[in-house]
Picture 1 (spheres, rainbow, N blue to C red):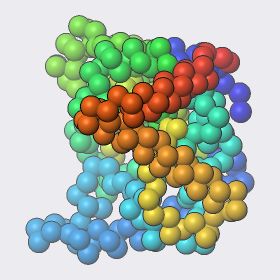
Picture 2: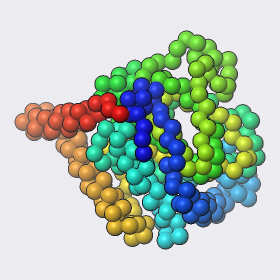
Picture 3: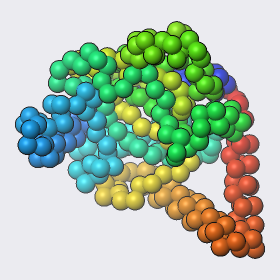
Length: 305
C-alpha cells in the first residue's frame, strides 16, 4: 500500500483506500455483526432499572464494542474481527507510519450507530485524544511527536461508507489557534476553519496521530460499523482466550508483543524503584538501556516516503 509518510507526519493523518480487500469485506461484516449481537445481550443484562430493554445499545449516542472486553465471546466464527488487525494493510502500514519494525495492536474496538439520531453530535465536540496527567502538556506532547515521531497511530476503518470524522490537518503539532478557540466557544459541534471531512468508502481507512484535533460529527441512525483502535510499540493484552482460533503467525505476533511489552514494563519499574531507593548503581544501566531504546526508535522514526 502506497502513501507518503512525510505527508502523514506533516498533516497528522492519512487516508488509505482499500485497506480491507473487497473479498474479505462480507465475511468481516458478518463476524463483527455476530459480536454486536453478543454485546447487545450483555448490555441488556447489565441495564439499569430505569434503562430501556436494550440498555447501552438504546441509550448511547455511539455504542462501542471493545474486543478486549469481549475476548471470551470471540470464536471461530468471529476471529476475523481480530485477524484484520494483523493484516499487512493495517499492522504493516502502522509499523511504517510509526517508523518501527513491528507495531503492536493495542485497543481493538467497533463504533456503531445509535438507534435514533443524536443531532447534538453525541458525547463530544471537537477534541484531542490525550489526557495530560497520563501523557504530558499538549505543547510537550506535540514537541515529542515532532522530534521523535508519533508513539501511537489511531485508526478508523469503516465496514460501510462513513463520513462522520472531521480533522484539522497539522493540528497535532501545535496548540489551538485563537480562531479555533473562538469557534469552539461559539459551537464546539460545527466545522472548524480549515477542517477536512474524511469521506471513507467501505474498506477505506484513516490513520491519524494523537493529539490531532478531530470531531465525530453527527451521530444518526444510518448503519455504522467502523473499526477503531490503534498501534504502538507495546501492548497490554493480558488474556487471550481467542488465541487458539488465530493463524499460527498471528498467535506468534501476540506472544511476541506481550513478551516485549512485559520486558519493557519490568525495565521501567526497576528504573523507578532504583530512583525511589536512591540506588545510582542500579539505575545507571537501566537508564542507559532506556536511552538506547529511545535513540533506536528516534532513528527509525526519521521522515521517509
